Image (cartoon, rainbow, N blue to C red; front, side, top):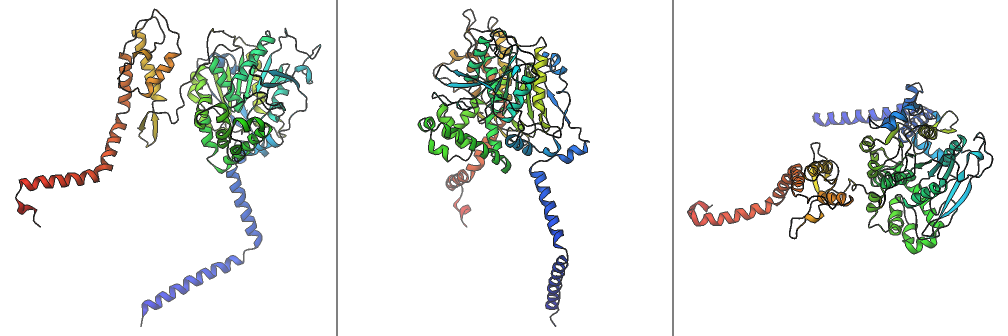
Amino acid sequence: MNWSAIVESDSISSSTNGYALLLRALSFIPLSHYLLASLVASLVFLYNFLEFHLFEDALTAFRGSPITLTYNSSAHIYNGVVSKCRILHGRYLATPWLSSPHIQTCFLNFFGRPPIFSYKRELFTAADGGTIALDWLRSSDVPDGGFHINNATSDNDTTPIVVVIPGLTSDSTSAYLKHLAFSIAKSGWNVVVSNHRGLGGVSITSDCFYNAGWTEDLRIIINHLHNKYSKAPLFTVGTSIGANVLVKYLGEDGDNVPVAGAVAICSPWDLLIGDRFIRRRFVQKFYDRALTIGLQGYAKLHELHYSRLANWEGIKKSRTIRDFDDHATRLVGKFETVDTYYRRCSSAGYVGNVSIPLLCVSALDDPVCTREAIPWDECRTNKNVVLATTKHGGHLAFFEGITATRLWWVRATGEFLRVLHSSQYMHVQNKIMNSGPKSPLDSTIDQGPFVSVVEDGMVAAVGNEQTRDNLVEEFSKTQKSHCENTDTVSVADQDEPGSQPESGFVSVIKEISGQATSIQDAKPPDTTPIKRCLDLLRRQNRFSIWLLAYIAIVTSWPLLGSAVRVLSRKKLRNVLPAALFRK
């Protein structure tokens, strides 16, 4: 008898019967239970996909999360101003039924619940012929805005003026800007929204367009207002892309700005990192597509100019912001590549040059401007900058209260500006003759001249951040001992024909040194600091060199081994007896 066949047939029969019994048991479960289970699974998926935090808020008894402040411990701006701001030292709790960064952001754009009022428009014509719409909301235009004899602002008026820079494709009618303008005007100040070129219902009247790093329009508007209302303190508030433009402008001009204080809300900081972030996940791609549609709508309004200056067919086919920037922004702005545009227009590298009181506000769950781009160390190093981050808030939303009629960052901005205005730390312009815009160090992405493999296996470019900072410090120390009468010595004249190729850092030293004013009495520079810098660079990249050598040997060994084996065999035939080579 074939016992193995019997056992096998019994096992098959039992397994078949087991599945049949399982299916029969499942058929007894009511259909409503399956629908309920599907609903619960869908809710769990949406809760995680949309990053809800309602249960997290409930565990804290809806007290909210504290505001995290990043600043220099010896900063006067914190000790004299921010330390007195109650809102910045409180907690933020999102509206419970909007406890998701995506729901908050979408609710702000589609609803927003802005206050109802009307602006008064002023058209400003730039030197290149471009037209900029300035929308005013004075304190006398809103209730409880204080007592005023007339609605006009005289040239001798001392009422503070807040200049607002909108975000990408936004204008003065955007809900979040109306919240801000109404709140500031209600406190007794005057507000003017500086619309980007081609927005706010104004046509493009020149071949110059705005972009994420175009600071010239803000510069001329600030100077225009300062000259016209010389006795009124000027403050600026930038939102999203407008915050990037604001920080870049403040870093470019340093002390030479007629601005008493500034606030940057939800800045993207590093456009290259932001570009990679917004194309990373499906939910981010939704924002990427939505913003691209807005940019295409903006281009459609000015098709006559874009069809002449850019690639109009490419603009119409753009699916992402990067596509639009490649076919439009890059060509109009005359940038070599899209990455070049992103690097040069990012504000993260300019934070260290800011010389006026600056409050930066960002949400860690911002679905558009990632936390990965926030320049934490630069904000901590600069004594004029205070960075306030919230755990939740979305992009420019920060709704609070059950009715979601208030924006937290609007209240925080107003309190900061009022405390700053009543303090002694308002910035006073220090005019510097022949001072052009300052340039930051190059971006830390895709710029390293060497490859460094660290202990955790990450591969990074060396020569831009830590290495460059160490070399700059080493260079500054050695220069102090060799040159007593100058702060920075140019090394451009030390290169001789036929010398070795320059490293990436030497070119940076030249760029930094070229910004200093040459002094005729300075001593000739010595080559010792340069040698020390190069030696330090070689020491930090020694491991990379050995790693590359190892990779070269391993990859070329099959070919070299065969060649060595053939050559050695021929030579040994001439020396050793022939019997040793017989099989």
